[in-house]
Structure formats: structure tokens, C-alpha cells
Length: 89
Image 1 (spheres, helix red, strand yellow):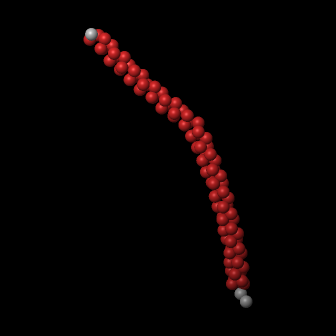
Image 2 (cartoon, rainbow, N blue to C red):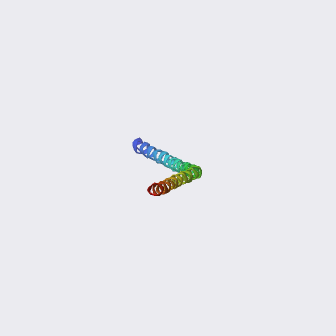
């Protein structure tokens, strides 16, 4: 028997085993990356909820300030209208 076909067969078997091990390791790494990204996503969702809980009262405060500003403008217009009626009499 010749040596070359035997060496070629042995190298082919070793290469198939190595590639199978590398493929399994890649799958395991991808599963771990998926878990890590899920944890990061959950953390970001929790941080977003906390941030919204902090920002929401500030937005309400801004809306209240805008409402007060509009109320003061209406009051000023009403006082101006009363003063104009007094001057015309």
C-alpha cells in the first residue's frame, strides 16, 4: 500500500474533527452572546423605565408652568380690558 492515501485519510479525519469542535465552540459562543445581549437589553429597558419615571414629573411641571403662564396672560388681558373700560367712562 501506498503511504499518501493513508496520510490523506488521516489528515481528512483530523480536519473534520477539528472543524466539528470549532463549529460547536462557535455555537456555544453565539448562545452566550445571545444571553449577554438579552441581559443588556433588560438593563437598558429598566434604565429607560427609571429615566421616564424621573422625567415624567418634570414634564408635568413644565405643563403646569405653561398653564400658569397662559393664565397670567388671560388675567393681564382681563385687567387691561377693565382699565380700558374705566378710562373710557
